[in-house]
Amino acid sequence: MGERELREEVLKKVQDADERLLAMIKALAISYQESEVIAYTVDGEPLGREQYKQELKEAKAEYKRGEYTAVDDLKKEIKGW
Image (cartoon, one colour):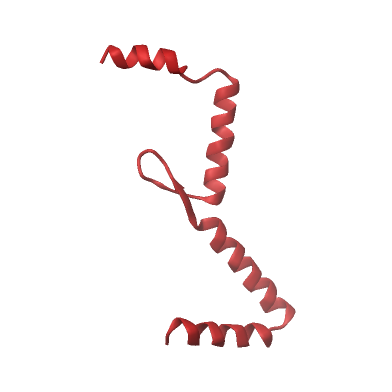
């Protein structure tokens, strides 16, 4: 079965679905979107939407606490390598 046929069959099932099945399909779609890889760590690990949001939240908190290296300091550090 190709994508087109599959899409048509799924759409027919959705059109005939009751409220319970529609709620299940919605939950599945949301879960799928949230688990979709949208970014990668510097080590190449995939990140889903929620993981990415959490990483951003943690990075902002680290920045606010002053846990970062300024560009000038980084340049000095690199020269010492």
